[in-house]
Length: 250
Image (cartoon, rainbow, N blue to C red; front, side, top):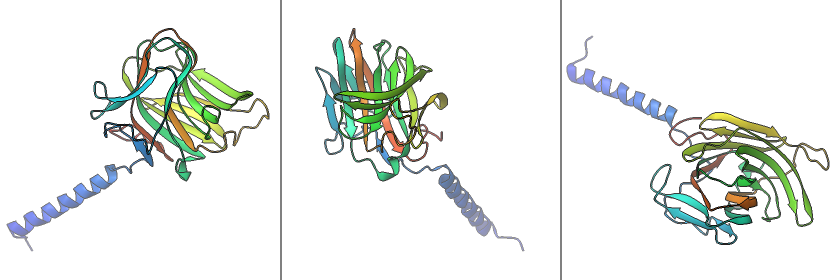
């Protein structure tokens, strides 16, 4: 039996609507478990703790952003030695404490300090004396490090390779694993560097951190910065699964 024109049109519209819903459901991704896009225009003190030395600054600005209107600018305004400026979040969700993935859009000014500069870390409470894994820049290369830092000394294992883009926004993704201890980095969706960690004291290669409860990003400079520099961050996220860029899957 032939459908009348109106019934036929209604049937086509229903099928199209169902297809649209299916495509939307397929393409939609769940929101990351922890995220910050700075679009509130301010640093929320209920969520973030500022760790700053010297004249360094942490500011939300609108002159340079990867997406939206706002991004965080972390600035070292003068030559400095062993200095830092971090935003830190404590008591991360339990799902992130043994193994997680992260994403941030990062803009590193064309002349960053050549010294070891931590960009982000995840580890135990007690900064600046804590245990953590880090993603850092060192002498133009990506450095991945496990650190147990105490007032009387410390224990670390670090490896470097690959390089960060300079003078443009790029999508930085990372993986931190505490069992076994391992870190990996992707740049703009492509594998950039990965490393396993072993304790130089005990020889252990698992549970070195003891859980990622705190997350910090900005910079920590271990050596001297001969001149001022800036780093910008946007669209920070953490999740038990790899997150990928803002506009698509990994």
